[in-house]
Length: 291
Image (cartoon, rainbow, N blue to C red; front, top):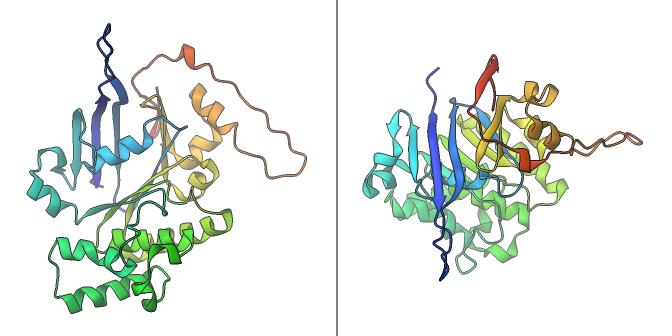
């Protein structure tokens, strides 16, 4: 099967702050990252804060310009697109942001927020756009009567549904979900995750799912890449990664998952980051790669 998304040797560097006595060295937030995502797949990207997960996701969509590397979507070179071509291509790939409280304009009615992509891309008449917004609200489990309300009138879970409706407005095939439930209560997280899975089945969506909740990743992702200091250190099918992790950092990360059985002890596996040496991925089994 031809991959929907292909990322090759992606690098993103930020210039470090220079001082009077020293020139700032570049900080490499994403370092030689390579992966593929198949159509209809939920590909997980995990790691601790600062590992480069979010930067990778935003580089894939060119919300952040990569320093170097190749990004292909439906075999189209995303980095080679002009601004006009990129705007047209963005109808096919969208993002759901982490924070439902800051990702919605508080001065706009939520119906206008969801309608905005349709206006920007000049899709349909005003009446068609309003009808589409109501259809999207129903799709994500909200009432059509809510379109005239403002973001502050909704709960966190409802706001994330609005953000998802906005992402779906242009009928994309690929969505980057950047920790979409981390800011929500546990009881609400399950509702939003079930909605994401339902929409994937109904609309044929492909997800790049960025998260730090490993239990959640194990439940919904087909394959998982583990990032550390901007690099992928292990990539494998989800079941294999959780049952037989190979990289020392992956083992340490999985050992931090809370135990659900009463009385079961949590045995943490330490990881000494000072001993980390970046190495290329090598295949150790079917679709299982370790640095």
